Image 1 (cartoon, rainbow, N blue to C red):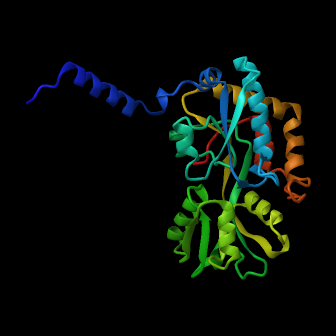
Image 2: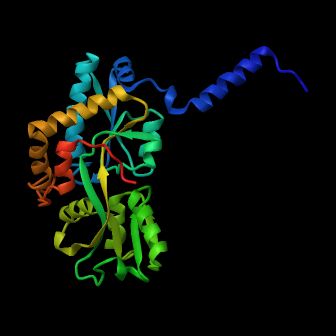
Image 3: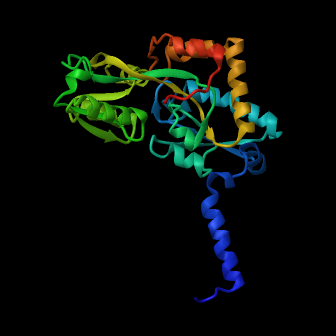
Length: 299
């Protein structure tokens, strides 16, 4: 067998370490932010009212506002009052890879905290609870998942909802065709154009999309709630210091009553850009978590 020179052996060893190190090779978030002088905050373009674009194409929303409070705390913790905030739009498909590889430092959207994702990333305290339902055109004969037989159903690729609907289709032999779309806006457009009969997604997002559409009366949210799940702000794994900071911000908001005031502002009041009101009462699971402050994932 040919022997490799020592320098070559060292080169191979370095490459092997880099390939196997993965996320653990990244600096802790606060150290990274302090050294670079910037923090990369991710947002969603159409996850109303959590994280979406306003009429000036700027990110806004309930989750985005909470992340603003977190950034303020990061400035204090790092001593960087001059901290630069860079923003990054993410999709259901790329949000986890971009967090793991260090492109973004925190994701403020509508990401479900579940055990499978917990193998790759970490989650802060749960800040919303929702369940999968269906968005259909008003007057549609579809009233529940039982009415989907022989129909076409769209859901956003990379979401837990897509996987839930695929499993439900198999388990109950419902016989519908499941279509994937890149984001929530495209999923709604697929139904609007007649290429699908229903859009399966978290009910609160469906209410937001319907209320923000050109004619909200053209849409209905129907069906029983399938598998209630928590939303949480997404962080990198194995960074307890940063998680403690984020959880601390959420705890102070919840204990002070500010969280409920923010909820009222985004879920029970007119919101930009069209001044629509979702009229969505706080779910009991969320009200309970204002006291419990759990980060327990869905299974």
